[in-house]
Image (cartoon, rainbow, N blue to C red; front, side):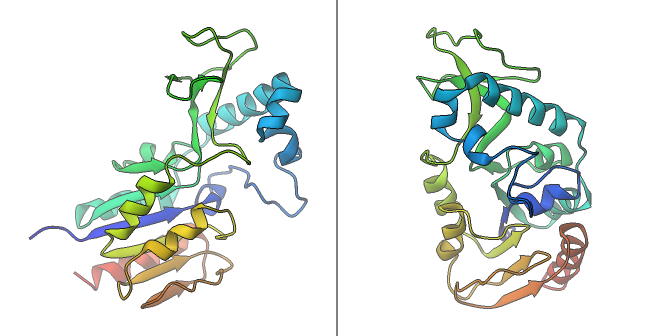
Length: 230
């Protein structure tokens, strides 16, 4: 019998327990930076060195971080389910935990691309410097979807959610669009689970189970609930 398709939308809350700072900390800053100064096309045009310094630091932070029990727990679900993870996170902790179907909505910290041609993408594990260029001669920039930029992976993500048999949200406040709108593509009536320390309002129809816990503990509870559905 075919495995049920389990689609999981994850956000910053799942990586916070691995020590990765979230976008929306209480001080409104991201690692001490205003988002507008480091995560917009305007910031890149104004001070590309500052933007590169910021993402180089982020890349080093992610390289030092380790997958936590929530990442590992979702990967373990692949034994009994056809698991597809859609993440708002730019880290690679899902992949390192063993998940094989991961779609990154907002780009990946270990990739870089031409600032002129977003199809020219390259792996990067060290720092990007001013003067580093793609094969088209353009400056290389982080392969990150900044605020005020389109999210090219949103359409493929919506198609994945629309085919779900079970839908799970982990560690996201559901306030960043268009990612937050993905919940509306989940079929009506399928089992839905939402795991977060502070459960956001979820209007999508059907059976919703709220698990108001940190991601590590919440995914553990999710595993037990899904075992009961087999």
